[in-house]
Image 1 (cartoon, rainbow, N blue to C red):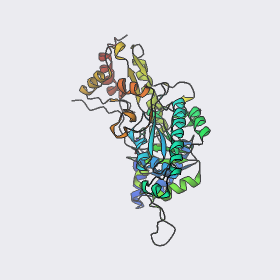
Image 2: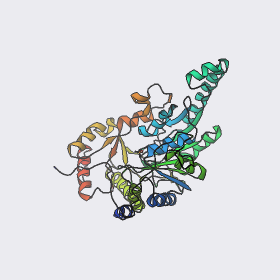
Image 3: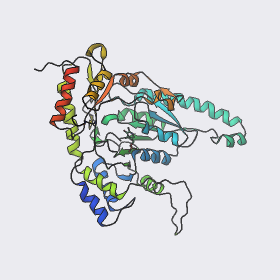
Image 4: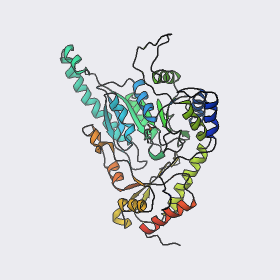
Length: 403
Ligand SMILES: *Cc1c(COP(=O)(O)O)cnc(C)c1O
């Protein structure tokens, strides 16, 4: 059978081994070293973020961002419902409650109006709860471990599949209520919003270099911020929070979250081809649009205005089964039979068994996207032969007659 075509598999640029070899030659085979320092500087240039900490994963970066924002048990953190679970899991690691906000149909990302509604309603509930706590004895407070006083500590916004969220509107709401924002740009390295790369439009940005992202370090992540002291603190917490002393002394709980110097070498080589990869992913997206342009009932995740520039990490479509003559699952199975990977869009977090019972503000958008949406193979290493195989399945399923 023909070689399997993946959604987005690692695509080396050629420069990676040089940096990996440097790590071996200098014996910096450790969770820090010259490649890590250089990767941080180069990421800063590539994103426009003033300060960067290279970490072991994007999930670790979100976790540290929330630790730095003081998220504690009993607190609330507003997250996006339509995302990968790694956006929301760190909220639960800290014993806080995720508040799940649905998407708006333009970008498929967080709906700013629903965000404001969520903040208003959760704040009202918290006020009532906190009043109740005031009446109880201190002893009771201690037993719960929460002690009342929970607050909305952060908003985690996602730029899904590379598409920037409506940051202007979201930041306006966040600023109105004084809540800091974390941008989950794991899928959106190099995407731009109003001329700036995403991940540096709020308090913190996070990146991922997992094997399936637009570039990879074989696994890794980064925390971005314009605040030097926050990134310094992140590096401290990510290396087991050692106090300055000759012996090992710890005053706070630390983590082992730093990036390895070998891994950073792969990341440096990949960063050299980031702009080329973005060009290739955008070109692939344009190819799909051309191929499917006359198919009724197929819509793409699209940039709503020139303010938005997606890296199109994955090209995603929605199929209206009433019009298209096929449906999402039929197409997915047809791809599978041809040895081609495609995948339903993310299942919203408010529908996940693990987050049942979390407050959710939904409008039907993410549920519809999940029901009818499909991620198409989008890797920059899919060659002409691969594209021909993909086109064959699409033409058959959508009955496209060649012009
Ligand atoms: C991949 C991803 C993450 C997590 O990154 P890891 O490096 O895999 O931990 C977080 N959020 C989103 C939206 C992602 O796609």
